[in-house]
Length: 99
Image (cartoon, rainbow, N blue to C red; front, side, top):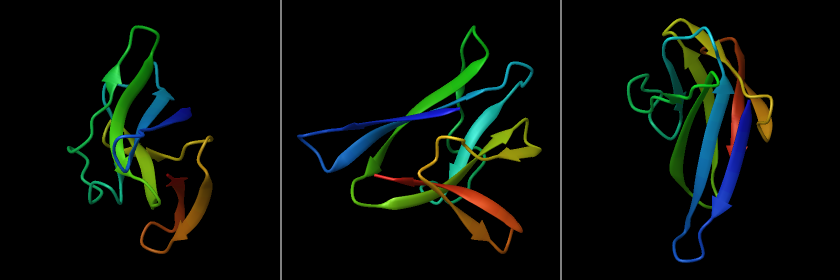
C-alpha cells in the first residue's frame, strides 16, 4: 500500500494518489471523510500488476479518515497512513491522511 502527495503551487489542494496491491480483487474503492464514506464515489483502477490506484485533489491543511473497500466486503487500512484513529461506529481504527 502506498500514498503519494503532490502539492500544487497554483491551488490550495494536494494531489493524493492512493494505491493498494490486491491481485485477487475484482473491485477496490477508497472511502473516507472526503467522500462521505460512499463506496461508489471513488473506485480505484486496476493495473496489470495487480495494484489498484486513483488520484484525488484534497484540500490542503486538512486531515481525512479513510479505508480501502475491497470487493465490497473487506475494509483495509493503509500501512503508509500518517496516523490511525479509533472509530466507535466500526469498532476499528481508520487510516488518517494529513495534507
